[in-house]
Image 1 (cartoon, rainbow, N blue to C red):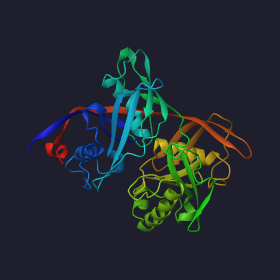
Image 2: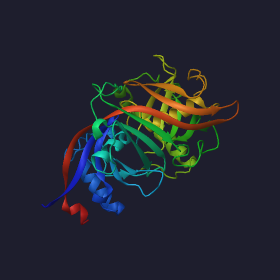
Image 3: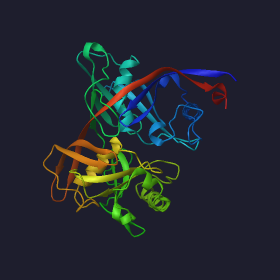
Image 4: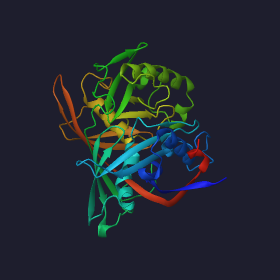
Length: 362
């Protein structure tokens, strides 16, 4: 069987990893593109044994990069979430962890010229339209991966990559609260449907029969929990204007509880059919907005926030994630202006990934 080689870079971005491609090296047609990405990852098998996926939702992600045609951006970042056990690709969401690797990958691929000592890369997230500034350490005009920054969920240390997120309110729906309510009651359960960087349905852990301190394994074993969350997510997606979300990963799900280790609050994030081992960068912004906005399910759970800009520390299964939020809040109004995080990335491999020629002829 003949195979087609496709150049790629393979990076860990934050607490996710996956292949980074030039968009021009992949099919333009979405159906053909999906067949290629399914083959690359090996989707349809729990171990992704016939591809380079890692058997989890955080290791079956794909970034596709191109030079941006917009004056406000240097690079266009098109994201694909490939399923693990099903041959399916979702292009509706974006991923903030994979985005951490976009700046370095763009430099490695020659899309952006590095300058000494750091390079600012303006990124347009194609899936959502958000603009993000990435600050990459490039001493001597080369990407530096080694450093002393630690992020929970990743062993060792690495060089920092700072991300400043702009225009993230209403990423998919056009509104922070797409249902026009701070709290919706779905099948007797209160949830907040909110869209900041990532559309989410957020609830109180105790309302779903869990404490919020469970491990990832304990939650993934709780089939009754996932069945209940999925039923509510279907309705939340409909109310948020997304229609039938049975084959889409949005809205994602968050369950919040009182902080246990000095954070503003504790969270468990669902992707949505498995528990995230840490916390998504986009999801962290949405959770932070929910915690800071008055009248949401977070009232009485999240510790009081301080003046803007505020470092929101969110507890998750592997530790904490800090998000710096710029916002305006009054007694009856809330505006989310921007958010910033510091993460790390590493180039793991580069070369060519092989796909069967038949996937392009189907």
